[in-house]
Image (cartoon, rainbow, N blue to C red; front, side):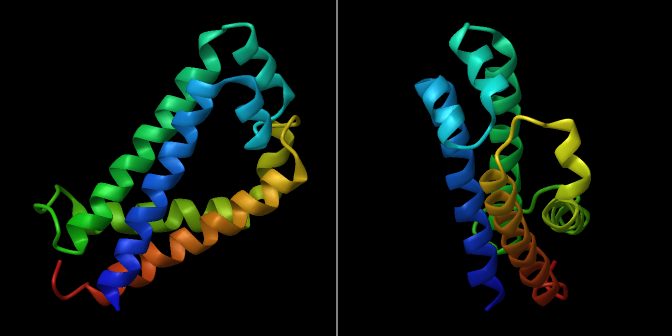
Length: 140
């Protein structure tokens, strides 16, 4: 069960990273479709580097998180600070999922659909990291 949850966490993190990268490649319409807001879409349309840099950073973080899930599942080598990373990843995702009302004022262009959907995904993903990591605790 632990490996299944960690594999779900790795797969979902990878898919999320790829969707973020698709925004960079496909531009304004994808930023809007993914709920990033009209400001980010307008900056992307204008060719401003900010949306691409932020989106690339998010993608890289998600891919690193996927690697930590794969490492905990024993599918790749042991990564440094694996236990600590799994705890921090879990806490960040669960906090992001629960505390989105506190973040909303900082991102006024994001749709409510974005907030609800991304928050639910963060809660589920954080739970997979947390429960999968907890079940593997004696092996890490």
